[in-house]
Image 1 (tube, rainbow, N blue to C red):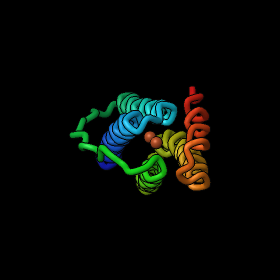
Image 2 (cartoon, rainbow, N blue to C red):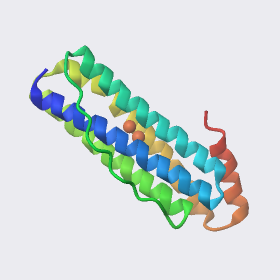
Image 3 (cartoon, rainbow, N blue to C red):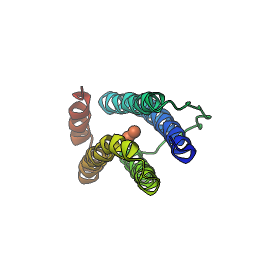
Length: 161
Ligand SMILES: [Fe+2]
Ligand SMILES: [Fe+2]
């Protein structure tokens, strides 16, 4: 595997770990706000990010590359409302989508067909993740600050498996 690709994949592992940490912080803050269902959803999200990091690690190994771990950044710890928090999560997913797309372009430039195919999973995954976050932001925007509907969103998100 080309060094440029290996470096980029290692950077992506770090991005996924940063994502995990951001969502863990969001889950903790949602717990603090008293929205346990939303916190549950966010913890599931954090677990998915760890899975993404491990998936890339596995691919690097399969290509006889060496994984390198970088420092995970300290995340923001508090948000004012669930809406603000989920908007930040959506913005973060959009940022991650851009990093995945850059990786795809890099593997195309370097004719690394295997990496491009491997990344297909992540391209599709990002569409789903953005859509899921978007759906929640949309619901929270509609209901504003009324407690009743917020409870409904909370029990909806508690159902995530
Ligand atoms: Fe991810
Ligand atoms: Fe994600």
